[in-house]
Length: 128
Image (cartoon, rainbow, N blue to C red):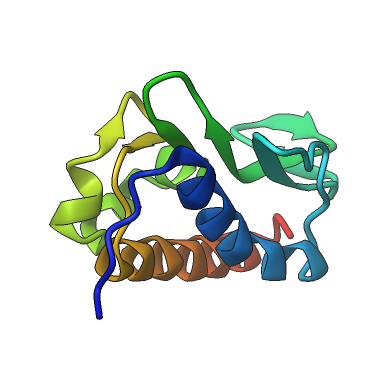
């Protein structure tokens, strides 16, 4: 059964559950609250010629009119958009924020695929 979630708390909790396994794969939480969950790599890296001691990976945040899925690999690696499913890409607003108002199993699987691909890119770039 493909149940569609429209409750923002449920959507947030579902996406957070998909992000949580990455917290033991080289990422840390800065915020883990009832409305925000994020993942950062604390690795010293050079990106675009600039030294950084952290790299943002992803977060999920309950906003006023949507649940924001912020996903930095899509910004850091524009070619990554090619691996996204069209249904997920339609929700991309701005450079790295997806506005989620409804979540079903198919969309969740697209988000999980994107996370796996983003993680692979971060590993290849030695950012995590």
